[in-house]
Length: 132
Image 1 (tube, rainbow, N blue to C red):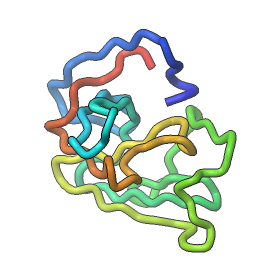
Image 2 (image 1 turned 90 degrees about the vertical axis):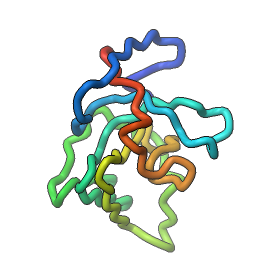
Image 3 (image 1 turned 180 degrees about the horizontal axis):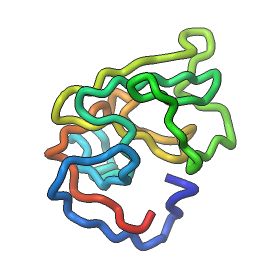
């Protein structure tokens, strides 16, 4: 989540009692298939019913057709998840009861774009970070 969070920084988390919102930084429990990563901290990009479109050539993210303003993003290197020969743009449809999460250190983030994480059920949300 660099630059929003740095290693060793204390993170306060508030248990969520309402639906997550776009831009929230969440602590979520990952599925058992992610070794060494029982919990991750990522930003909500999409909620249930949203369509998230990522344009890797332009480093732009759209939610329901609207460009997301992301001043917190770190783009210091090329995104290894983008295969320039395969796809320049990809679209995700977020299922009801789930969230689509991405890290702020986008080019080095294991997040909802990966099969290991994918869409995160709202039941896996531990809480919202209060001080990112």
